[in-house]
Structures are given as C-alpha cells and as structure tokens.
Amino acid sequence: MRSIIVAILVAFAISLFCTPIAIKAFSRLKAGQPIRSDGPQSHLGKKGTPTMGGVVFIAATVIAYVVAHLSLTTLPEQQIAQVKPTTTALVLLGLFVFCGAVGFIDDFLKVRRRNSGGLNKRGKLLGQLIVGAVFGVIALSDPSSNLQTVGSTKISFIRDISWLDLGKVGAIIVFVFIVLGATNGVNLTDGLDGLATGASVMVLGAYSFIAAWQYQHWCADEGYMRGYLGNAAHYCYLVRDPLEISMIAAAAAGACVGFLWWNTSPARIFMGDTGALGLGGLIAGLAMATRTELLLLIVGGLFVIITMSVVIQVISFRTTGKRVFRMSPLQHHFELAGWSEVNIVVRFWIIGGIGVAVGLGIFYSDFLRVMG
Image (cartoon, rainbow, N blue to C red; front, side, top):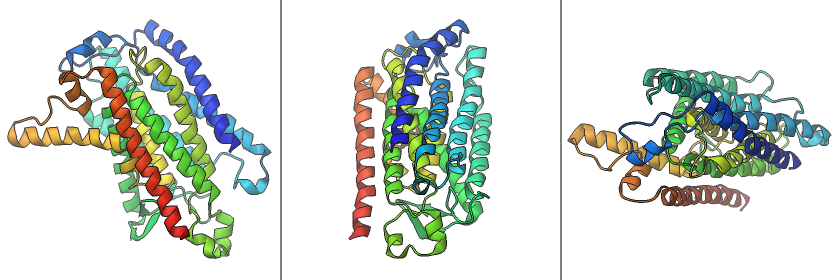
C-alpha cells in the first residue's frame, strides 16, 4: 500500500503549492469567474475570482499517479499484474482529463465572452457523450487482456449482477449515462466555496478504500484463467488492476485536499467546469472499474440529492408554473432562506459523509455476508 500513500502525498503537495501559482497566473490573464445575474445576490462579490482551478488538481493527479506507479517497480512481481501503465489507468485518467477538457472549453468561453454563458448545452452534452463513449469502448475492448476488461457488460451493485447482462453496446450506453449523471451532479454541486471539492474528497476516498479492499481480496487474472480459484471465487473480486484504481482515487483525493486549502470560504480560486466535469468523469470511471455502479447512488448521495432538486424544480415549474424551492440547485434555496454559506457547506458535507459511510457499510456487509 506504499504506492497509495505516495500518490496521496505527491498529489497533495503539488496541488497545495501550485494552486497559488495558478491563482496569480489566472489573475494576470484576467480569467475571472463571471457571475450569473439571476443567481443569489451575495455571489456578486465573487465576480473576478480566478476560475479553471481544476487544471491544477487534474495535473497533480496525473503526475502523482506516474510517481506512485514508478514506486511499484520495487514490489515483488507476484504482488501486481503489470508494472507498465495499465489500460485501467488510461481509462480513469482519460476520463478525468478529457471531461475536464470539455469543462475547460466552457470556462474559457465564459472568461473570453465575460458572461456566464460559456459552451452551449448541446456542445457540452456532445462533448460528454463523446468522451464517455470513447472510454466506454476502451474499457470494454481491452486487447491487452485475454479475459478481464476494465468495465463489465453487466450492471453492478457491489459486484456484477449476473442476470443483468446488457451486452457490449448496452453497457457502453449505460456507462455514458453514468458519465453524464456524475459530471452534471458534481457540476451542480459546485457553486459554494469548497462544497463540491470537499464532497468529492469523501467520494474519492471511499473509492480508494473500496479498490484497496478489492486488491486485498483480488481474483488475479492468471488464477481466474487457469480455473483453480475454487471457493475463493465466492469472496474475491473480479476487477481489473484494483491497486491502480486505488492509487488514482487516492491521488485525486489528495489533490483535491490541497486545492481545498485555497478553495474554502472565502475562495481564492474556483475549480470551474474544468474541475467539476473532470471529477464527475473520474468518479463515473471509478464506479465502473470497481463494479459498484449502483452503489455510486449511495456513496455520491449528496450529488444525487442536489441533482434531483434541479429535476424536481424544472418539472414542477413546467407542469404547474410553481417552484418547489426558492432557487435550485438546493444549496441556493438555503442561501435565500438565510443560511450562511459556511453553514450550508459544512452541513452538506455532513450529508455527503453520511452517504459515504452508508455506502461503505453496505460494501463491507456484503463481504461479511458472502464470507458467512
């Protein structure tokens, strides 16, 4: 597990010490965040705060992964399937970087046009669809493995549900929807200083733990192909490169903690859509790679709640002409109700932490159930 610790520390250090450099650079470039005119009036004072900070923690995660992966070269050969970079890393980091790139285009257009419009909805949706589809195909078509792929054609909760086999095309379509849900969920949660960053740290930490646990009880490809796992198949996890998954999730969590130092209220920099869409893409990839797609609804419960508040608001207004909330997403409803920004962020973090704790509890209870 040394590589996981290395990933956390390297990502944290890079993000913590490089974010001030990004703040100065974006300030000189006048890359300030435009504020929506129809948003809470208290946000007008944030106008001009540097945005696109997601660039820092995305880069920190990639660098930390490389450093941590190099540390694996000193491990005994039997403890890891490959020392060279894996397809799993390609998929997860690819989702992180390219979903972030879609957000970067959106942020860049906002800054250039000096308004909150950015990339139009169709353009953003198309970008997310393309990234999700491309990496979904890669995850299910890995030519470097004779058996185990990064993704699965089956719907999963804590493990693959054997009777819910969608086939390759169906699985890719479902994964694209997971990417859309996760990216937009994190993006909608972003809006108060530190809210999305702190919530993402908890979710990423949970997935690092899940993958590390799977690594400790791993159905290694070689043993599975030889067919001599026997009773071990009842409790081991059929996932691809769980140690790599844990390293990447840990690196991203560490990078976000470093970024949170500067992003907490009052924020000196925002992650922007660059960071929000990038984190959502990575979280979707982690759910797919660990075979816990449905569990994501619980682990990422805060993102689900906030997304549903927008859905409820839109449906109610279009069907009845009335609003359920003063403003959506949900955090803005409580702002208009008189809650302070810090109170909302901390209380929403508590809700997010409860979802993570319940999700991890369900994950571990399944292990105990299978072990008898």
